[in-house]
Each structure stands twice: as structure tokens, then as C-alpha cells.
Length: 110
Image (cartoon, rainbow, N blue to C red; front, side, top):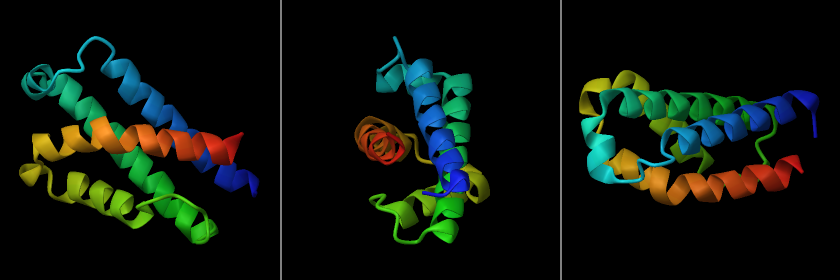
């Protein structure tokens, strides 16, 4: 695997770790929804993840990351549709999809 691809995988892994760190004792939707700083922090990490996946797809389109295109689309939605962000959708992604992505990224890295 190219060094540049590894760098983007590392960035994704770091952003996922940051999301998990932000949520340590706040894994409750109501806390998430009522904490603007927490929401914005998680949204920023999702932007980074989406941008890194986008760059990875350009380097190696055969890379096995489930829902890669949806991850990039999420990044675009968060950035360009900031006024239409749905906290329920973001929470679902963080709760269900981010752990799966973490596993895939770690398998590719290690």
C-alpha cells in the first residue's frame, strides 16, 4: 500500500478515535443533541473522515471500505448542507457505522 494511502487511513483512524474520546461519558443522544460543541466537534471529524476517504478513492479505487461513496457524500452534506444536518442521522452513523469503519481501517493499516 502506498505511503500516502496509509496516511489517509491513519487520519481516518485518528478522527474516529477523537469521536470516541469526545463521547466517552456522553454516549447518550440527548446529551449529544443538547451540546453544540460536541455536535460540532463530531461533525468536523466526519468531514475529515469523508475527505480522507475521497482522497483514498482517488489513489486506490479498489480499496475495501464499505460505503466509501456514502462517507464522501456525508462529508459533502455536513459541509454544504450545514443548515439541514439531522442530529438523529449523525447519531446513527456515529453509533452504528463508525465502529465498523474503525475495524476496516485498522485491518487495512495493521
